[in-house]
Image (cartoon, rainbow, N blue to C red; front, top):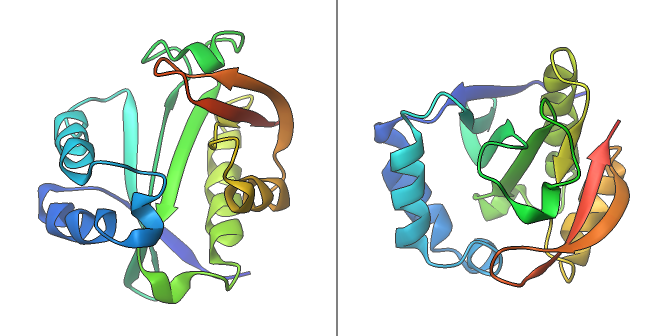
Length: 160
């Protein structure tokens, strides 16, 4: 088991986030970097959302956030009760792709979250077969396909 560390996202991390959001492998699923950055900056002061930079041996390589399922009124999670955590993430440093790091840090974060919360949910795009596979490897199970506010179809998955 690798020793991943998680630390709160700060203003000083925004240039790194901008770089990561501009990479092709992140832009595929996290469109419009400037909008994403603005949301990150806005949410830094929101105690309902926990935004983390993921590192391995002091090298930051991924971003992850989680929040209560009811915080943003996302229709794809409407059937889940308050207290469930919704997680979203991406690997920013391409050197960390394809080596099992995604599964590793997701499992580590879920372990931490499950100490306090009954369930963790994710909603990768239904065409993101790689993301869905990673979440399955990390112990998530398909729950249902659901539409987001903007009409995208996502695979809602839960870790019980």
